[in-house]
Image (tube, rainbow, N blue to C red):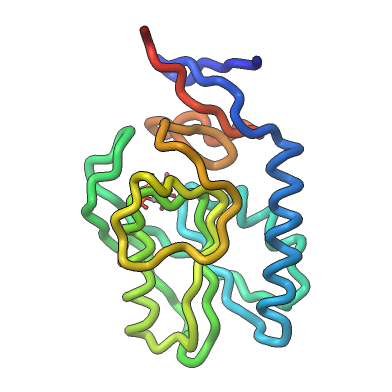
Length: 181
Ligand code: PRP
C-alpha cells in the first residue's frame, strides 16, 4: 500500500483520488436534487475545504454562489482544541438565502456549530453542511452533518486539502497516519 512521509510522520493511502472523485460525483448528484431551484450560497471554510469545494462546485447544476469564510481553532496540531474564532467573515447579505457550508472534515463538530449559529444570526433561510469526511466517534456537537462523503475512524488523516501542521494539503488522495509501534 502506498505510503508518504509528511514532516516527521508516515501516512498510508486511505482513499484514492478515484474513490474521492466518485464520491464527490454522488454527493453533487444528491445536492443537485436537494437544492434544485434554490440557488444556494456555497460556503467553503478555509483552508481545508478548498480542493473539495473546487471539485464539488464544478458538478453542481444549481447556479450556486461562492463565498469563503475562515475560522480558526486555536492550538490545533493533530487534535481539535474546541475554541473557534471567526477570522474572515461574510461580505454579502445572506438573509433568506440557503447556505451550504462545505468542509473537508467534521471532527468534534464545534466548527460547524459555531458557523451555523453565525449564519442563522445573519438570517439565512437554511444552513446545512456537506463534509467529505466525518469522524463520528469524535463528534460532540449539536448539529449533525447532513451530507457526508465518508464516515471515517478517528485516526489522523492528511491530503486532499487536509493538513498536518500546514503540510500535505496538496496530496491528491487521503492518507491516514501510521502509528509508531
Ligand atoms: C479543520 C476542518 C474543519 C475543522 C473541523 O480545520 O477544515 O474546519 O477542522 O474540526 P471540528 O469539527 O473539530 O471543529 P482546521 O482548524 O484544521 O483548519 P484548516 O481548514 O485551515 O486546516
